[in-house]
Image (cartoon, rainbow, N blue to C red; front, side, top):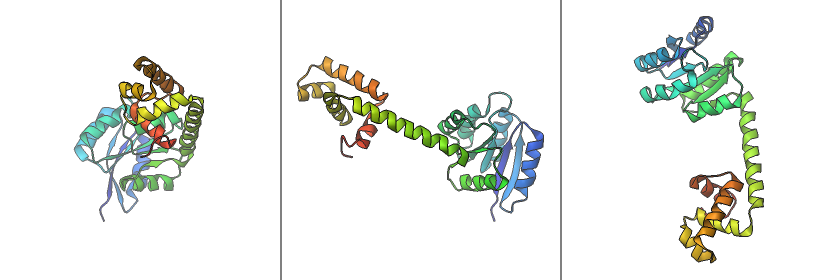
Amino acid sequence: MKKIRILIADDHAVLRSGLKMMLNSQVDMEVVAEASYDSETVQLSKQHQPDIILLDLTMPEHGGIKTIPEIKKHCPLSRILVLTMHDDESYLKDVLKVGGNGYILKKAADTDLLSAIRSVCRGENYIDPSMTKHLISDIFAETEEHKEGHNQLSQRETEVLRYMAQGYTNKQISDTIFVSIKTVETYKVRIKKKLNISRRSDLIRYAINKGLIDF
């Protein structure tokens, strides 16, 4: 059986020792290296190319979040599972943004950690169940915000949004709805402000979700 090769990165020696003992007791896992600070984590990751890097977020030097892109650059096949005490959703979002593959809290049960390691190694993403409620709350909040924004759009603004999402230029929109280019630009500013959306790709996605254009 091919074992999951794991690097433990945490500045607490006692925690590393306990994790190493637990992980090495699994028939499908082995700890290949331990690191206690960020630069050592990157160095050992490059050297061992582990399947899983179990990463703490609050180690000396830069902090785990800034280390993730550096690890990914040198070890594109390694998967990063953050093991942290931080249950703040801002940390979770930052980890996901920079390429982390999983997020589990240190208070999680041993069985949950083992399950998370196996899931992430299979190519799945893992989020601690106690943290998913934060993501769900944010999704509902964003949905309500967009819904309210859409309800606030005037009929003409909705029309302009539809043409924007379809890729019309300002000139094409002005010719179609018989207003000046300057007026079209004003509508665009209002739309982006009301919806709190600035990127065209996000406007297209929003228009599709609202049924303003076919996809």
